[in-house]
Image 1 (tube, one colour):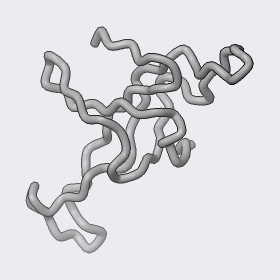
Image 2 (image 1 turned 90 degrees about the horizontal axis):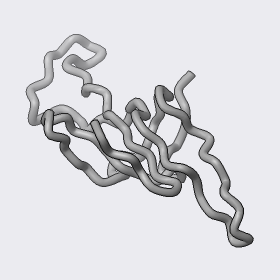
Image 3 (image 1 turned 120 degrees about the vertical axis):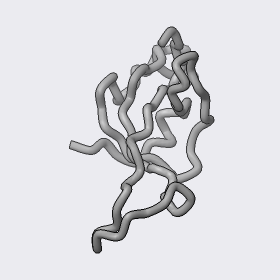
Amino acid sequence: MNIQPLADRIIVKPLEAEEKTKGGIVLPDTAKEKPQEGEVVAVGSGKKTDDGKLQTLELKVGDRILYGKYSGTEISTKEDEGLLIMREEDVLAIVK
């Protein structure tokens, strides 16, 4: 992957949606919910503040994150890998 996000944007690889419910029912592809958890695969250089200083991002490559259901812009790479580009502010939490 040769994509470098700009400013305060990050690239996220969504984790696979659950195939079974907690009760053990297997879900067809049409019934699966859009994943809201992913792994950060690239980060931008940071956000410029009003006084011109560069504020680095809190996230780093490899972090597992939670994000809003409709956050980010979907892109696909040459390898048909589905990725999301979003701003750091769209991230809700880091999963530890």
